[in-house]
Structures are given as structure tokens and as C-alpha cells.
Length: 439
Image (cartoon, rainbow, N blue to C red; front, side, top):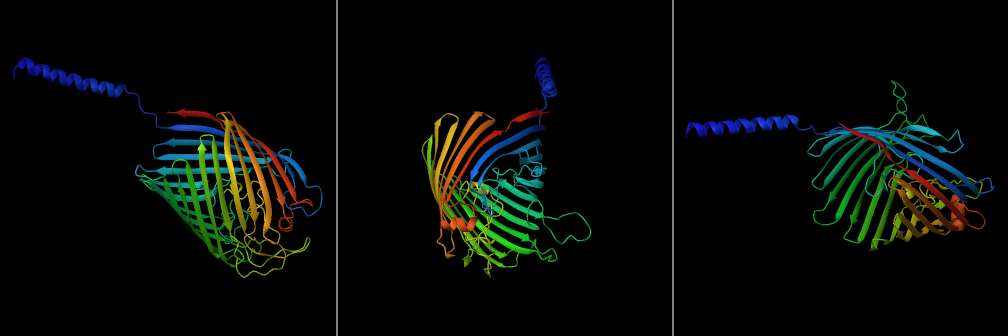
């Protein structure tokens, strides 16, 4: 090779290498750190005529304004994220009912292969939120102090959850627990989800053990173990969405009684067009047998050897069983539950941009046979509207009417002589991200 040609090749190689070095040094470093501050303000006014149990026979009409504020801070970088959220809730003008607490305080370590560990106060939200959910309608959003370990990847998700609660961190007297963030002493859960490739089908399995203690007898430090096992399936081909769920509870509840309870649900919805969706479904939750309704002003003395009433545990209760929240939010007279049947149909319609409406009808009845009363609880008609004022501000309103039966009046002490209940509400939700920075 000629010397001049060889020198040219060497010079070009050195020049290219030097240029690559300069380009590498001058290229800006990728921003991997993100810090965000967000706010969620929820204010709701309600007007009720009939509702929660009323033993004084006075005017059932009530009007009030309630609010909830969440202030969150979140940090993210590859492999690590952490979040802290403060929560305040209360009724306008009330000093006693105001509460301030820490809703979230967790850290999450994430590997590139899909493994993760998340520890601290966190929301547990799974499937349709029937067993684990945020319950955002409530003025105190639901969270758990827990350790969560899992894997997510290739269509598979598996989460292992563990929690152990204590009233105070001390050396003595730590066998009893009551009055905490959640009512259990200990909780363990295993959740597995699989999305079938090339088919719009997802299925989940859930196993949970809950250790509870009897809050009425502090001297009894026995932790009773109650278990739940079940499955949830969702199939969504094009315009159709079908959901099925089944859960079975067994073990022992806090009074030491054996548990044998179950629930099943089915729901289908169909998109007529992008603006109109029709839906319908049926929920069945088992109830305690030999359910005697005590006369007004008396205490029921029915003896139960086994608990047959299903407990919906830590789900988003307002999402199911009627918007008036008579079931699985407040208790029945006598403490036990006759279960519930909920048959419903409805539709969602978007008449104009930003405005959505939802109209539904519910027929409600007990699952268990009652003594001296039939199973029918009544009919409930609901309408809800939501309008997005802007991307992070919305206003909603709703009205519910229930025509209750004698059974409803006896079980819930919630209806007047006309057996009619009315509930209206209007709510403003503001949820902006007020600050974001990256470095």
C-alpha cells in the first residue's frame, strides 16, 4: 500500500474517532429523575330524605357538604419510585369529624426483568375492585400498611401481599389489635393474573387469609383465621364486555364461629356506538339462615352456629349494590346479614362532548329466607351525570329514588311510612398536577 494512501486512512480513522468522542461528550445526559406534586380536591353536597338507621322517629331529611383533599408527592427513576400522600377529610363546619392522616407512604424497587418489591402504606386495587379497591367515593380513601412482592411480564402478573398490624410498638401487651387503619391483625394474599395472547381475555385468581380478633373482648387475644378464594374473568371482544366473578369464604370469623359463605356475579355490556352503551348484571351474596328481624326497639336473640353471610371485605362498595349504599356499608339490625340479590340494567350515554350520563334500575332482595317477612327489599332508580369542565376539573350530579318494602323498613330502619327514599348529590372534583420537574 502506498504511504500516502496509508497515511490518509490512518488520519481519517483518527478524525472519526475524535469526532465520536466529541459527540459523546457534547450529547446531553438523559434525564432519569422525575418529581411530581399533585392534588385531588373532592367536594360533595348531599340532600337525603330517608337513609341511615333512624331510631328517634324524627325528621329523616338531612343536608350537608363533605370534602376530601389529597396532596401527593412522587419521585421516580429507573428501578426506584416512592410516593407520599397526605389526606384530609371532613364535613363543612364540623370540628369533631375532621380527620388528617397519611393515605400513602411507600417505596417500590423494580428490576428490568419484571420483579418488584413495594413496602409501606399503599392502596390495593385489583380486578373490578369488589374485594380490594380504592373506594374513592368515600371521604377517606382506603389503604393498607403492607409489603408487596411480585412479578409482571409476558402477560403474567403475580403479587404476594403481607401485612401485620399493631396498636403500638411496645415490648408488652402486643397480642391484641383494634381501631387501626384496617380491622385485621394480619393479612396475607396471593393474586395471579394472566392475559391470553391474541384473545381479549384476562383471568385472575385470588387467595387471601385474614387474621381478626374480637374487639368486644380485649382479654381474648385469639387471632381467628378467615380465608377467601375466588376468580375473576373478563372477556372483551370488540363491542362486547363480559365479566364473571366467584368468591368463597371459609375459616373462622372474629366471634369464633365457622364461616361458609360465597358470592357470584355476572355482568355484560355492549357498545351500541361510541356514545351509547347498554349493560346489565346480577349479584348474589349469600346470607345467614334463620334470620329473625327483631321488633322495633328490641334486640334480636337468634342463635347462629355458622356464619353464612358473605363479607365484601376491602372493596369499593359504592361501585356495587346501588348508589344509596344501604348494603355492605352500614350494618343490618341484629348485626348479621341476610345476604343480597341485585338484579340491574342500565345505560351510559354521551349526548355531547364532555358530558356523560348513566341511568340504571336495581331490583334488590335478600338471599336468605326471612322469618315473618318476604325477601324483596325494593326497587331503586338512579341517574348520574358528569361534565368535564377541563382536563383536570369535572362536576357531577346524581339522584336516586328507592321504593322500599316492609322488609327494607324492618331490616334497615331507613324508610318512612311511605316507604320512599330520595337522595341527591352534586360534586366537584379538581385533580391537577401542580408541579413536575426532571433532571
